[in-house]
Length: 162
Image: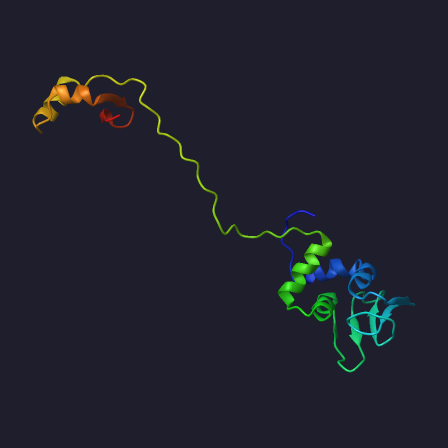
């Protein structure tokens, strides 16, 4: 099935629509007896103490031997496997073939991408050279370090340090 979000009630209804298969999975050794699936206990086995409705209210069950537990098929998973409700819902989803939407705990690493090199690098114009000279940087240094200038669409003339 696809990776949709289902609530517990919907999952319980999906299980109920396949109640006899669920009983065979959870209660091995049980058997169909008319409109009920019967077995000894939540562990399965031959007996009549536990009954699961197959018709009418499919999936509703009751264990009459000592514990007198009951409920829907999610509750039966909890009792049969000895798990909490969250684990029972996950087991039901696995059995039904529902893939969970789980949050990604480790975000994907972004691939490093080199910045684009300017396509039209030109030597600094005289006003740029004067700007650098006023700060003690010679024209020879600008050439050695390939300092250039590009025309940026938004900012106009821009100094570039490759």
